[in-house]
Image 1 (cartoon, rainbow, N blue to C red):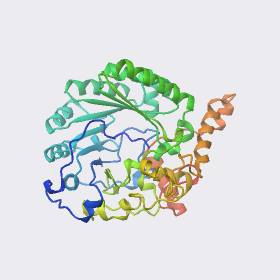
Image 2: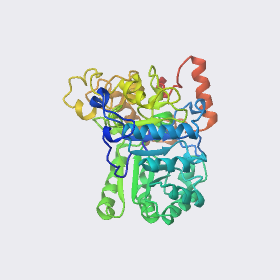
Image 3: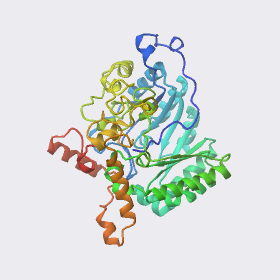
Image 4: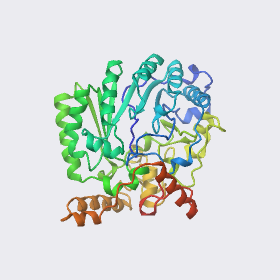
Length: 424
């Protein structure tokens, strides 16, 4: 899963419970902090077909989107809870015609707002309307620095459009975060991607190595880089940080599979992040829909305050009491909180297991095998040998999503299965 919407600018300080309308101190707020970051996934519809999209494989099953009025209620309730940073995401949020209305209300409520977009649909007129509505900044995605690879990876012809949108962002005075998801295909182009960001005037560049959830999980064999590619890219980033760090702040997010210690899941499950899916499902993390047995509450029938503090979904992996061994007795548990729950499920079959990225996990060999497979594919002696390691890239399309959904229904599963028989 790629986390394309993590905070890249300072958020306003959270207000105290006593100063927020509708929020009174109680036993819940004394033990559980309020959400600080709200991600509004306005829609799963998208004109792009990226092979690394973190949206669920069966996104076509979740097509009943919240109305404008319902989204406005979500924004008000989340702000009352304490959320201060708001990302509008998708899919492509601009396929909806009410984004300006939502931005205006979010601005009135005091959110720091961020639009996460492919650029498709971001016309000059909409940029002006969004600026007037109070939008704070825009994160624009590119797939590569070259037209050929950018358009291949998204299965669209959008490279020139993205460049025009980037120029328009600067003309309208928006701070710009440029985002590029990295993997085997474009890691060798990191220097050119940075040069493109500098030429376009980006204040921030997020080089987010692919995280393997959703569609990226299905394409893991094709996207997984080698350790050598990552090390070379890191060296390039370090060089540009030294020479251009004042001009553009560069983030480089290392993929979990090449670490020996896991990252905190969303900086703590049910601690900071609150996601709302297009159909109103509340998500403790972007990929939580893929965890079996986790009943996700919905804002259509459950108050947001109750969802955050009382629901099983947000309490299941909150804190430390749920930890199993070896995490329970580990002296590093306060640092990583056991790691990623979705990764644990995908690689071990149990979301409560230690994240296998950790080399203390009894399942760490699963991660080692994936990395080893990527290395062997890269060094195959012939094209035929390389092809034996891979299958064609599967692009995110409605037809493929319906195919996953149908297969899951036929086998009686709640969610479509990913590679190696694990549901994703």
